[in-house]
Length: 226
Image 1 (cartoon, rainbow, N blue to C red):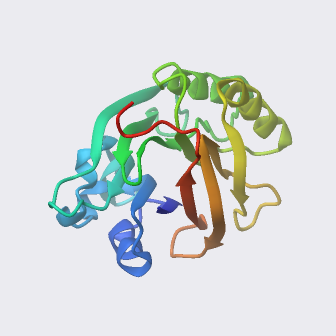
Image 2 (image 1 turned 45 degrees about the horizontal axis):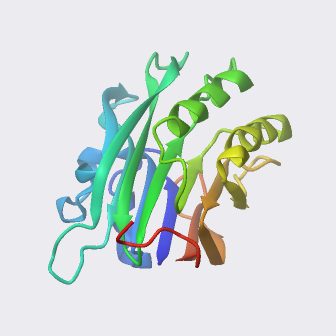
C-alpha cells in the first residue's frame, strides 16, 4: 500500500492535486479545506471538520481520509470514528478533530489521521497527551493500525510524552520528517502490526512537508476475516 500523510495548511484543492500527482492508495489529511476538494475523492466519507472563518475565507476544516475504491467501485472505508480533543485551542477557540477508520486494502487496518493539540503560544504537553489518550480509548486494543499526522511536538519532551502514551498500546514510531524553519519534527507515523518498506518526505505548497510510505501488513497482523 502507498500512503500519503500531509498537513495541507488549508490550501484549496491541495489534497486532490497530491492524489493526482502521487496516486496513493490512502491519503491521511490534516488541516484540509474540505469544501475545496474534488467530490470524486470522497473525503467526506471519513472526516471530522469544523466550519470556520479564517483570514478572508470560509473553510470546512479538520482531518479526513481518502482511500482508493476497489475493483467494484466501492469504498474500502468502514467503521468511521471521530474524536474531539478534550481541550480547546486558544487562538481559534475551537477543538482539534481526529478521524479514525478501517480501510480494507491488503487487509483491514485501522487508520488515525491526527492533528494534535497546539494552543499556540500557550503550549502544554499534558493537553497533547490527553488528546492522544482520547484517541487511544476508541481504538481497538490489538491489530494492525497506523496513527499518523501533525502531532505538534515542539521538542523532544513532547515527542517522548507521546511515545510514552502510545508504546504501551503497541505503537512504534517508524518515521518522522522535517518541518521547514524548525529544528524538530512535528509530523510522525506510529504503527502497530505493519511493516514500513519505504518512507520519504516531499514538499508542496503547504508549510508542512508531506510523507509517502509503502507499507505491508505484518505476518501476525489481523486478517480480513478477523
